Amino acid sequence: METWITSIMADFGYIGIFLLIMVENLFPPIPSEIILTFGGFMTTVSSLNVVMVIIVATLGSVVGAILLYKVASYFGKEQLSKIVLKHGRILRLKESDIERAENFFLKYGSWAVFLCRMIPLIRSLISIPAGMTKMKMSRFLVLTTAGSLLWNTVLIGLGAFLGESWNEIVVFMDSFSTIIYSIIAVIVVVGTATIIRYN
Image (cartoon, rainbow, N blue to C red; front, top):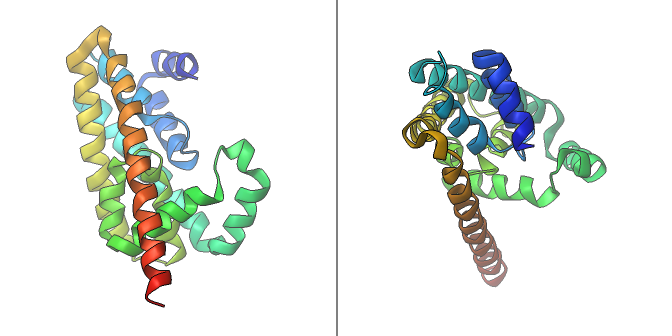
């Protein structure tokens, strides 16, 4: 997948970055860490500009998030769960992934939209509970844009800084993702146990 992603970006520049990030928001298993860090690296060996790469990536993030929000708003949780159960292998998603995003949203409210934009996998899926609860679009857009801009700026900046060693950050992010998923699992287990105990 890494070769496919980097070749699209090398061939299509800003348009390739926009499309890949938009698709990454719709199909979370596509790793934004590769897209963004390689995009940063490309600014050191091509005519691409760091600021423009950040802007284009953020636009792609917001457009993808809006599309997923609209899908979740239209179908609702029950219908989405059925889709994931039926086509989860193709989408590379599990029903538990949606549950994780929903738990974050319920725990932190609308601010979860901002915070989760910086957590791998959940950064895309957080649009689903926001859409299911029909969160106010203006607030969703502000928090999504702010969180995406921060995430994109950090990873693109690191890619530009590391240059040819850009893929080192991808290795680090894999470890970071594992830690985050472990923390989420603990929070879900503790939260569920607490609810069962006091109800």
